[in-house]
Each structure stands twice: as structure tokens, then as C-alpha cells.
Amino acid sequence: MTQHEAAAPLIYIVDDDASVRDALGALFRLEGFRVEMFDNGGEFIRRAQEEPACSILDVHMPGRSGLDILSILNAATYPEPIFIISGQGDIPMAVRAIKDGAFDFFEKPFDVDKVIGRVREALASRQEREEAGSGLSTDFPGADNLTPRERQVLSEITAGASNKEAGRKLGISPRTIEVHRARIMEKLGARNAADLVRIVLMRAGA
Image 1 (tube, rainbow, N blue to C red):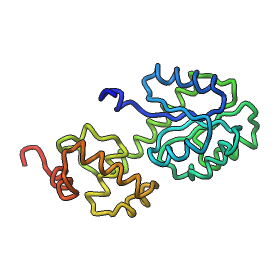
Image 2: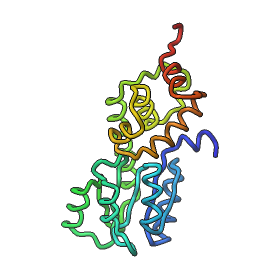
Image 3: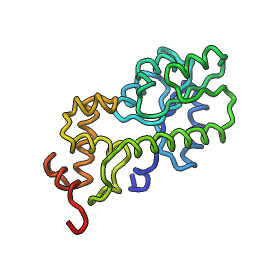
Image 4: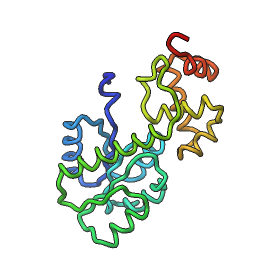
């Protein structure tokens, strides 16, 4: 994977209909997204908890439905926007999806341009909230290489939070914090947490 591809926003598409998955996947790739696709909820849930990302879920699937997955992921506090799509949608279902934390609800057949536009809006809104809520300085070597989520994790680490404390505040598991910490250290060339603090506090001309 090239550096450009790694920096592209990731989106998960979950639908048991291969034609829908393939069509959405192709369109989002053309729009510059990285795409991972799943035909069932079980495998997706594990991946979504490991690396949160914007998700598009079908309601009606074998096993866990899209609404079940919203509940399992606690979508209201999930750090990335989740969209629900359905070929048999109705108003009560849409209301439930939004109440359970979905960012939006689309009925099939849907307007692809509208779906892509709403995903971009959701991601832009999330990034604005993250940047507004983070007091982490960007004036340190390697800052531009970090994703918004990595900046959040780094802010917690350098403030002295444990993995458990950071995970609780950011709404992700301590294990996920560990994964982000390892990636941050690799990107910044830090050997340990103390080294991370030193790098972050280093200012041009200091």
C-alpha cells in the first residue's frame, strides 16, 4: 500500500448482496476511499472494533441485522459515522436507526451521489469536532503523518492517561489504544512513552 493509499479514508460496506457490495465498493474507490467489504455482521464487528471507520450497513442480513450491529457497536458513541441502507425500509425502522446512533438511513434503490455526499459530510463533520476538541499542538516532527484518531490518542498518552483511561474517554477498547500507540510510535520514531512526550514538546527553534 502506498503512502497516499494509506492516508485515504477507510469505509466498510456490509451487505449480503454481492452486487450491492461490489457496486458501492467500486464507486467509493473511484472517489478515493479505501474500501473493505463484508457479507455478514460477525466478521465486520470484529474489524470495526479493531479499527473504527465510516460504515454502511444493510438492515436485512442473515444472522445479525444492521440494527443489531448498531446496538452492539453502541453507535451513539462509536467514533465514526454509521449509515443504514435497506430495500424494505419504513419510517419506524428509519426512526429506530437514527435513535440507535445511525448518521443517516437510505432506502434502496438509492441515489449513489447522495450517499457519497452524505458520507463526505459526515466525515468532515467528525474531523471538525475532533480538531476543535483536541488541544494537541501540531508543531512537532511527524505531526502531519498522524490521522485525526491518532492525534486524539497521542493527546491522551502525553497527558498521562493509561490505555484504559484513554479508551474510556475516546469510546474505544484499551487494545485498540495499544494498536494506535504502536502506530504512532512507529510514525514518530519514538522508543517509548517518554520519547513521545519529548517529541511532542519539541518545538521549532526551541
